[in-house]
Length: 289
Ligand code: HBI
Ligand code: FE
Image (cartoon, rainbow, N blue to C red; front, side, top):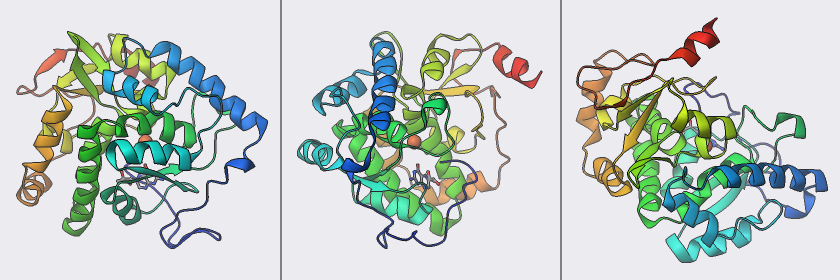
């Protein structure tokens, strides 16, 4: 999930060779379900008019508004009928090759655990709220569902080509922190935004960040930060355009070209960028002191 992740080399005790575990829905405590419900209510109230229609439709058709942490088997059954995806439980971060293999086979790995009540606003490892509330609704969209499968296959390829860092930036700036031009304005669809109350507002309403038109090559050269709100967001025109940009690109020569160029530092605007809003970066300066 980050530019530098640290995971075990082999599955922990009790996990299958592909790192999956049983969700064991019965093991969640009343406090766990209450944490889900608190987070759900807060985000659900913020999202109309802010989240992409595809995301809101997914939340609805997957029946995610029922109280409590969702049962992955039930969720997978619904998702399977819609787009052929499943949700499988894992104990935490899994190695990159395992992550990509699941994705290439339309299995989304979701953390089994939920954050503690004193961690409502920030957690380091993706938990069931981030993974299910944040990611799974978009998997009900047929075009986005195809994009993620293509990403999984691309990940396997990027590992072979030594370009994981470059491809991971594409995931970061689309799947995790993406914006889309929709309904005459901007909407959020990235899971890291839709699952965070503060970043939902920041990404759309703050005058601090830059919002730039999506460009595949540009994004794969762009460093990102994992410890604060983003300073640059990238805006796609449509999910079809995003899918097309990835399936119609020959990544091997593109990686070769990008690996020979310097990374683009965070918060940079290049002369060739399509600037949708130019930010003040006052949030970043304030954070720096
Ligand atoms: N494992 N469970 C889990 N969730 C992730 O988002 C994840 C992962 N392992 C690797 C990974 N992400 C990233 O390294 C890839 O996006 C590159
Ligand atoms: Fe995520």
